[in-house]
Image 1 (cartoon, rainbow, N blue to C red):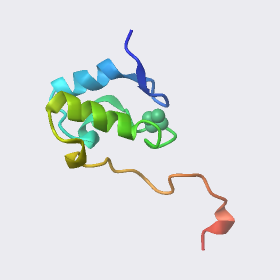
Image 2 (cartoon, protein in one colour; image 1 turned 180 degrees about the vertical axis):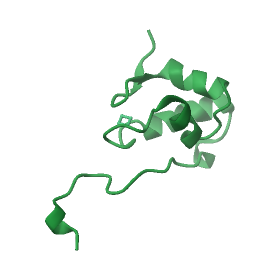
Image 3 (cartoon, rainbow, N blue to C red; image 1 turned 180 degrees about the horizontal axis):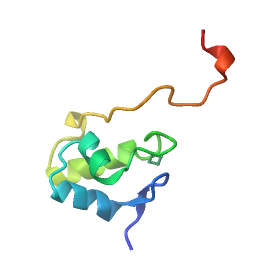
Image 4 (cartoon, rainbow, N blue to C red; image 1 turned 45 degrees about the horizontal axis):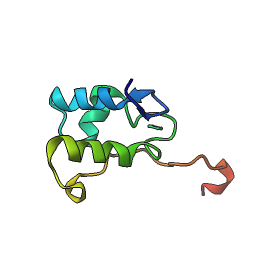
Length: 83
Ligand code: FES
């Protein structure tokens, strides 16, 4: 059984590897293929693990992996704090 990488969307390591095998070559493409990184936490929990898997599967250096895009605010805040 493959381990869960993205807990919010319940995406496993095998599903991420499958996305890469299907042609995803960036974290954003993996996101579009699998929905990993699109959950409630917007990738705060899984982003680094996905980058490591992408690096390992493609042979790219980890420091060359472009981080995924994400929507702000990344943490819920009270509306009164927004001015
Ligand atoms: S754990 Fe992946 S989006 Fe939250």
